[in-house]
Length: 512
Image (cartoon, rainbow, N blue to C red; front, side, top):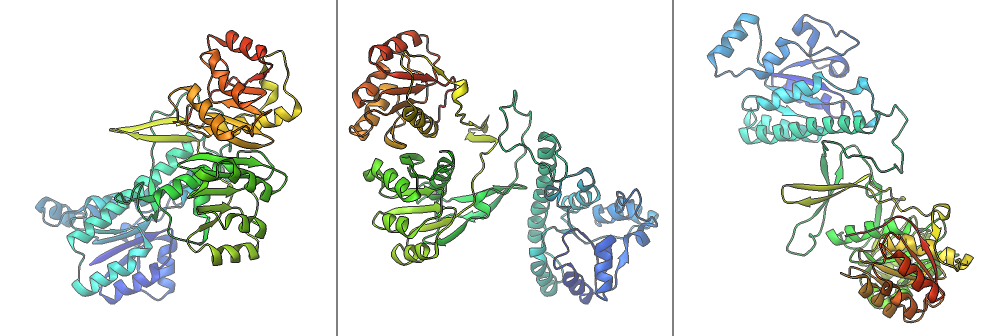
């Protein structure tokens, strides 16, 4: 029996080689893998001695040779194959151990592996006769089966072949993503906030690795898991859970919404409370305790069982404020030691997450029958210089500050949506309505007069002047909306008639 070992990640490969040698296998290897095996005192044949060719073209061509691929692809039950092997002196290779250059770690032309994927795919194709191992964590399993049964079962070889094709598919997806990103050089990265592309790519290749098995899916009878995109590291990859139950699908989904919103509210201390992916409270303030207190007070009924996110480290005072409220998840950039100890003692079921700031994905995907809907990310722009005041009255500085908060919040609320903000606090949030008047009515009812003198934000234009009724009834004095209705003149006239200031942003933020 003969094994070919050629790996970039050399974790465990020497122990594997030693185990194979002890089982009587002949070993063939190349480059650094061959050196590591030989230095450990394990007999190994260099690929160059097998093929009669040294590594050439700066190591671009090493294993691309008929004696390598003929040995991997040969079907020993096929007389024609056996005849060719005899004619050309090809010996069968029964096991291939290979993994590929870490392309995503430092993308470059020289890290586009050719020989490795060719060997992996050849062995996976011929899995009826050849084993292929691409994951070092499988070495013990493979050795164990060889020791107990002298060969790998067809079931094992099929499973290994499936993983091998996933390995090469993921590798190709990383390279394609690099090309689509404009092939940034070493140390360079695609812009964190890119302008919307004029056209999405003709193809999108995704490789998803299961990173976390969740308690259940959206409902307890569904299974759920969190996957990561191969080659990318979002904030979830480095987040630390300091306590509480395992995460469920909705815990992850709502926490992502909370963390994104908390980091979109500007540079000051901010807190949000999320329920069913929508904010039921949001506030900015001079300190994180005030921000959390105001965010909770927006809608304390809906805050029950919600997700809390704050963009500053949690102090003991914040922990004590959260303690009486049933909260599913708390996510923050850090915790003062006494605050963490307090929460771990008093809130045994609270999922306490410590996380880095999130990034906005460049594309969003939604599954449909037979495929996906794909769109570029909805980046929320807050820029007074590009906005237009369309009414006779100009917003005051206090109103401008609330306009910015309201616009950031309403963009993250399920449409149709209206948000009422006063002094940096979202007192009324009306979301997910089929018409804008109902969204405004709900926002006003929740605000209950607390947003008087504040801002009324709409995620899309008002199709009729009566869209302002909710602002007037809530006592708001300023409105922010995209504009663009065929009845804008009528809406502006209604605003002027009621003494409202109104700002057009020129940008809609539907969210479904």
